[in-house]
Image 1 (tube, rainbow, N blue to C red):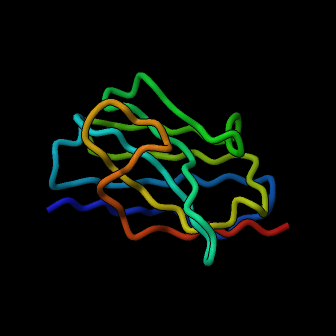
Image 2: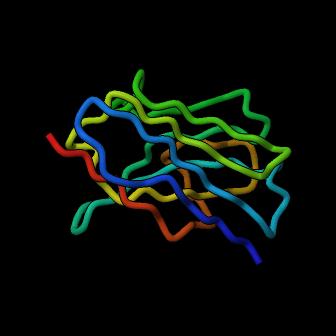
Length: 123
């Protein structure tokens, strides 16, 4: 079955960096859009970044553009999110998600979700 396992979360001071990873299995990874989303308790889920199946197109929310970079390694079935210049408002649970196809915008429906990894940024 489809499995998405996130790792790399943790606690960091404002201005610091973290690199999240998502290991994917159980589906044809190279045919799927992949994305990172985040959600704080009691708040709506927010799309952070997405990448097309071949990696040629990327999408970012305005809140992270210029600070976060999404990347994927199709040989290793792994998705990454490099997060630089972190701010306290980036504190959230971060989720990896997948959807079949090539229309990967953050406001489209993603079908498969990981369990999440917590990122905490202190001021």
